[in-house]
Amino acid sequence: MVSKISEGVEISVETFYQPDYSNPANSEFMFAYRITLENHNNFTVKLLRRHWFIFDSNGQSREVEGEGVVGAQPVLQPGKQFQYVSGCNLRTEMGRMHGTYLMENQNDKISFSVKIPPFEMIAPAKLN
Image 1 (tube, helix red, strand yellow):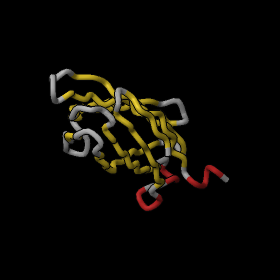
Image 2 (image 1 turned 180 degrees about the horizontal axis):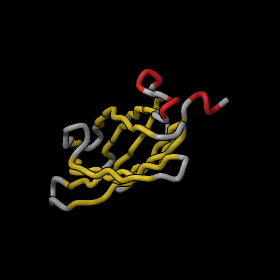
Image 3 (image 1 turned 90 degrees about the vertical axis):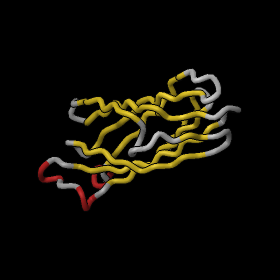
Image 4 (image 1 turned 135 degrees about the vertical axis):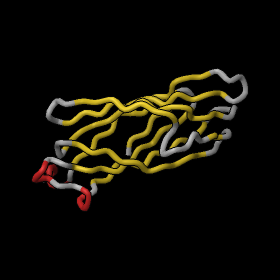
């Protein structure tokens, strides 16, 4: 697991290889990741948008942007957490992701960016 506190919001990430949804013979590798957000600020925050940078080990990269996460724009009061699971497909057995969440202070409605720490996705067979 990797964790980072940015702008008072802690982001923790765990990754899981999904062999049942992968097809290595066709260069299809599916990973799930569980993200936990925890608000360490003394004000309530709302997650507005996400922006991901995804890298395969063959040098290919892509970006994904959009509103919220898994169809939600969670609101976190001080000291509260929100957790979700999502997925990423890669063309190689290894890759990495990082990104940002656009958050909004619910007191003054000012937006700010929270960094999502870089994390690796590695198929277990690649570790042998």
